[in-house]
Image 1: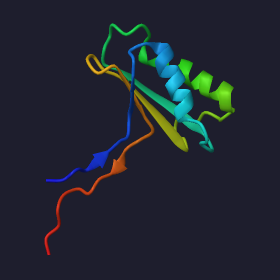
Image 2 (image 1 turned 30 degrees about the horizontal axis):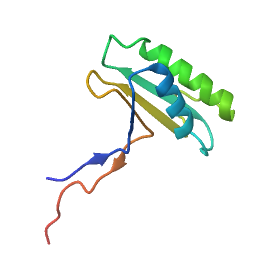
Image 3 (image 1 turned 180 degrees about the horizontal axis):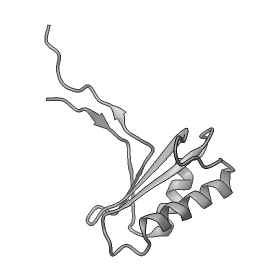
Length: 103
């Protein structure tokens, strides 16, 4: 058995400001359009998934001027609010080796 996909994530404290600051830093130097995909597994988190995505998107746009494209972005930023592990941010999945090959 192998690893099908991997992502390089950054974990931050579970508060909206930490997530926003880190998201802005992760988007530095990107080109083209972007979208924020937020998912809040911990419903006790201070803001909803939609609010978090909107706040992050507004700050990224203010900082860099990137256009937003929610359907087909050049870069997607994923934000996951977990119950135990805080907030994780990453820019997508990369293919892994997907198992061993014989022969």
